[in-house]
Image 1 (cartoon, helix red, strand yellow):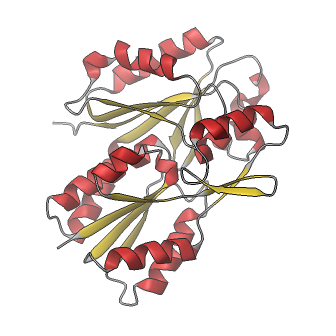
Image 2: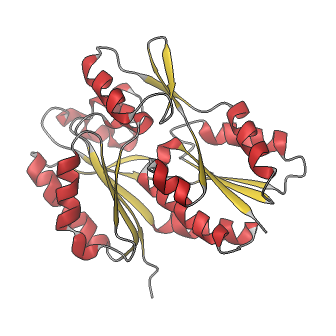
Amino acid sequence: MSIAIVTDSTSDLPKDIADSHGITVVPLNVRFGMEEFKDGVDITNDEFYGRLQREAELPTTSQPSPGDFAATYSDLLANHDGIVSVHLSGKVSQTINSALQAAREVDNSGTKITTIDSGHVTIPLGLIAIDAAQSAASGASMDEVVGVVEDSMSRARFYGMVETLEYLVKGGRIGRAKSLVGGLLKVKPIITFEEGESSPVASPRTRRKGLEKLKELIEEAAPFDHLAMHYSTEPEEIQKLADDLEHLAPENGIMVAQIGVVVGTYAGPGSLGVGFIRKKSG
């Protein structure tokens, strides 16, 4: 049985990695005024962050249309027996609803497409998709791939440090991290994703202390099946963090990637983060 894996662009997977695993990425949209771009297709990350820092009005984002998903699913079913489509949390985006609507339209039998709300976003979502793709490549059935996804979801985690909460607040994605807003200009907040939304972890006063806290959180979470780090505008800083934590790298190494334009709309410049899937206990 041949199972195709689909995710969305908030997985922040570099194109070469997605391609190497045969993962199809459906892009979300970002809009500056009247200009709309598909994430990772019509605008590069560097072009986006340049505009984000220059323009007075923040961009907005939107989910792929059901038609975008339907076209993707139809193309894939021409050469595959089934599809597992795993996406960002439904608490922060309607992407999963577009995927569900398209699946009902394309798969009349209801047996060929399984859509999954991962409860995650950004790098952990990408790592979950990689696990799904590796399972599918090994010849796993649809149910077996879904089982792998659910297991990876339970072991996935994200920690991110933002330069300011301004972008999360203005974008309406602050979630439980709203408790940090009182110190908006005084801290370098560290957040995680719990039950599908942003949640506060720590409020270090300086960037240096924030990086130290991130290291501590990562060391406490080891060992890993996957470990990835990403940045919006400071590649040297995240590479140094990866180098400092090389001793915790799993067999497949540490993936370093740039935060894409949709996640970057809410994270903002100067953000960095770490996503991982822990090793199974025992």
